[in-house]
Image (spheres, rainbow, N blue to C red):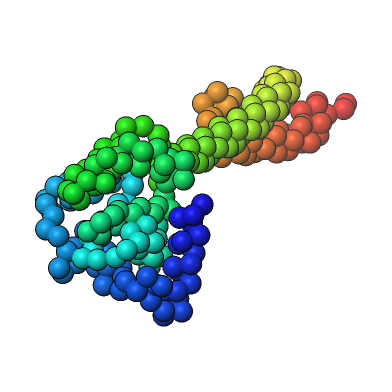
Length: 271
């Protein structure tokens, strides 16, 4: 909680353009850490920069965006870290002065940060800043989950839920379409059965009429019927079923014309 309050106070000072009360100029550190995760102030004690960058990389492997500032002076390292963090995006700032260290993180929960600091306390308090940073990074990897990792997990879960939802919608939509196709197919099958009866009933009267016009229409109707009956079994889409219905309508129209004409030409003339 104290670190959060320090960050808020430091942020207000940065926004107001006022240097922190402890008099340390952090503008150079903020600007540098915006481009490079390691800043060593001119005049600061020599550090093993290679080891320091290894520690920064290790922290990032644990999901923590670690920025390290090694300063030449400063009486209040925690306040310095909070002030620097106020000038950066979401990050974890580890600050070293010749006599102290300070950490501020808006990625880690306070309880997790306390655990990490407890594990790395001895090395952080020692004379070797690089060793302190390495211990801090190692403690990050020793257990717990950073806020960044939690966010990544949450995002991953949301993606999974979203994909699952889309798959479910797709399957539900496909199931609805399949049910509609099945109902339509059943309706057309009933229609072909009724039409088959009509084709059989007209077979003999058409033959007896010996009328080439009726025979041609009847043959065309029978052909359309046969095509429709075969196409129903092969139809896989609603478009295919529409084509079946069109053939049935053509057959029905032709048979209706034959039926309407047969009473006049199919019956023998009265004596």
